[in-house]
Length: 321
Image (spheres, rainbow, N blue to C red):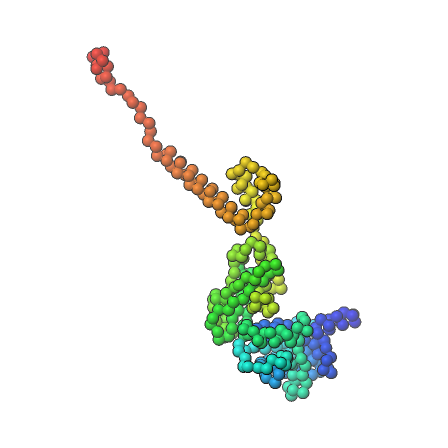
């Protein structure tokens, strides 16, 4: 039990760097919002402040409900915070590293908050974020809804659509323009046309079946929070069987360039296979139209007339009366 308790405390970030025990830190470091939680059982902490040297950049109270944290620590209160970042900053001396501090009501007790996931990266990421053109952007990934990847991203008071990036391992980042209408954003001070929805079929087939996520930057440093832990795109439909059938229906060979057909097709690029499939479907369509035209023409042909000599023709030859 003792080992389990120690592991839980390490996971929750229990520290004693300032003479009293506390736990917590930054969970989400976003261009428009820094959020997390902090608990110090013996010292009541009131607010969180972001500083660059002596300059106060933003401030927020520690007053957000976090039942998961309270249950894990056996603590009652509201340990969460959500620090909204400004879209613009005045000229600053960046020589001192940015610091995120949690303070008591009288300011006599303070502690520095860091990223829970990777504390050593906190100062560098804070500085890069505050100097970035992304500053002030907010967003969220709702997940796969009604067959499309949906969410939103925007900046308060800015009506120009934001651009974010879809990311997946082994794929080039895919740009997404956030210019679709989405309900509820105006109440947050954001343009209502800040939503995005992407049909997975609009992506190259190589994205099929991959886990994806969105980031504010092309490099993928600043991720959008998302509703689900994992978002996996549906697998791309296999076209190989249809291409094989189309080729076999129109060709008598099973070897191409001294290779078995299946082996040769596996090396053909996916976009070329799709092109073949489209051509084959068009050919079948033309065949159907031709059959229908032939059937219509045959049904409209006039019946052959049988030539019958008139009854009086024998008289012309001198026979009969």
